[in-house]
Length: 230
Image: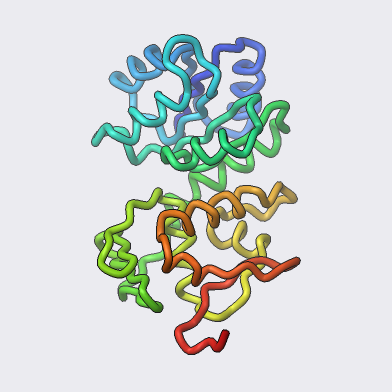
């Protein structure tokens, strides 16, 4: 049985999350502070962490940053859950390495679907054998390394997967719904802001080569092929 750690200081919300996830077949552990969460992680292995941002003492952003800097814990998927829905908060959470971000009030069913999708991604990641190179951007799949020109680019796991999917289909328009399905493995009717946030961060991190990720108004995005005429 897969084990999920819920770090949430609101007892009613934590109880709601636990009830729905246990109903979906997961085993749940609970903590009300970041410090308590790390104590539990020292004693138990978990498959995923649901992390509230507005925690006492150490907030969720700091917890996420600490998780991603810990060699033993950095590969555990994190879904951030918060009442703060501003774009800057979503960007900060995703930049720190969160795998997904949900805003309260949330649908327990949608949360369960996102948990399932994040866990499934870890099991079914495609085993690409060849490196990718389009324009000034190159990807070493095996080493999980990206370069924009001569510069090494540090990407989160989801940014990396999104870039791989886009570069595998140069010149082809990808709708937000298609990217949600292929990158996040989410087929439910959920917000597409996650795609837009990740695309924005990819462009910023890649710098000038990031301009190759083009917006197709009203449809989605495409990675410009080298022989495209613009």
